[in-house]
Length: 326
Ligand code: ADE
Ligand code: ZN
Picture 1: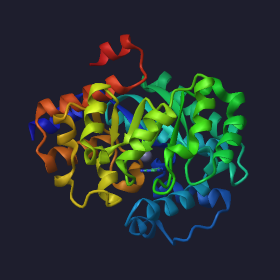
Picture 2 (picture 1 turned 90 degrees about the horizontal axis):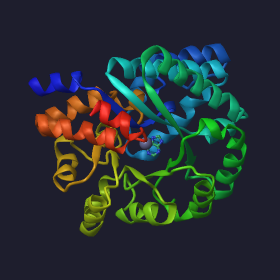
Picture 3 (picture 1 turned 120 degrees about the vertical axis):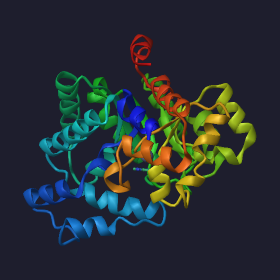
């Protein structure tokens, strides 16, 4: 299909990617063996077979278990570098990636080990692949605000490596309001914020993320269409939505990609774009997401160009770099 050629050829950014969500089963097994960790699977095929999810939580349970194979700085380097090489082959020129320090510090891994491994790979990606990047520290919302505060304190020595903060993990029952003080402290430190909201949770969580956390971007946000006034606000204030279509399909946020509201979000004038979330778990990196949407929704060339332009607009690149790529 001619629009598919466009998807492959255009330079792109990725703004919603959990680095732990790029852990492919092959690497999971290699690292488990190296680090002496027992996985509840006999082989790579069994891991892949387990990737059938009913909702966000059923995915998170496997995702956190999988991340337990990451131990040394080299492990975080190898994970991040492998993703950067895949991004390069998808013609991605800029990445803003999430990491979940609490997933690792709760197992006794030093936060510096995590941050140095990731940032060393990101620097190599800039030097060797020409991919620019930002790193976003995400707080796990199923844990307490105090746990988030302690994580932020532990990250203070590495603040030069951190470009912003985010909020992820189990959404229902953990509204943004729970983290108001933590995000105020982040703002005082000059860290811009994003937040997962309106993935499984209600549209009101999107409003809370904006008003109570000062989120500059909403991750997912697809449930905004339950609230017409909110859609108008997101359009007027040009709040980006980092939509992840294959994730939404795998986590049963939508039961059919053809019913995804991506096109409606564009038609409503929203700054929405496509991202891959946890590609090793959801069956596809960025190009695969765009190609699947193109096929399921019959996206036009102009819609694809709009999505990709939005990804640059919503990025934290300086204006001069945005102008260069768009
Ligand atoms: N952590 C990794 N992927 C996530 C998602 N899709 N929603 C919430 N937390 C996540
Ligand atoms: Zn996510």
